[in-house]
Image 1 (tube, one colour):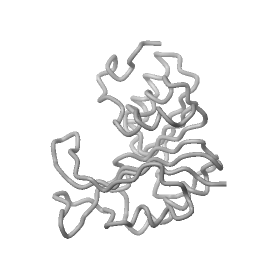
Image 2: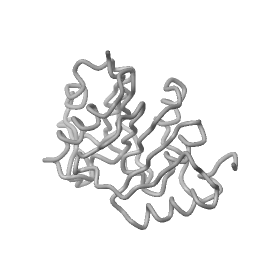
Image 3: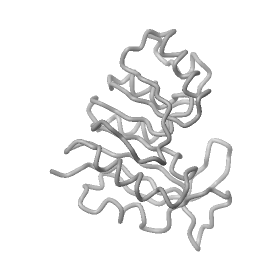
Length: 188
């Protein structure tokens, strides 16, 4: 397997928070929610995870499947799935959901978070990075959903917040906005 599949296939590098989480999270069953063309899923597979990568976009899933086929990756399964359905059917050690929640219907986010939590193994992790809209830093983009201050951490009461911040960051398109960033571990 190539040292960096993302580079080989012209994809953006894995999200910095996914790379950072891999310093702590031991390889196991992983879910990449809203995988697009697979930048995080490919990285996780290269780190030793068995990855299910889901997205609502059929052409993104086809593109990722093509990479999987060309590389003979038996530890990465791309699947067409609408995360807004909140209907996961497997338990995972690590669920990554980076810059994805802000693209789904706000009315569905609570169910999606509950579904992620329910399908995380005890001792497993959820990684979430999502846009925020706050009085002091209004979101410059019109996403269907954004977190308010403290909303993400409140949704994970009872979990160990390994990392949590609500800092201003830059999207891949250069837009500056505030993000809720969390790596949380499911307590026993």
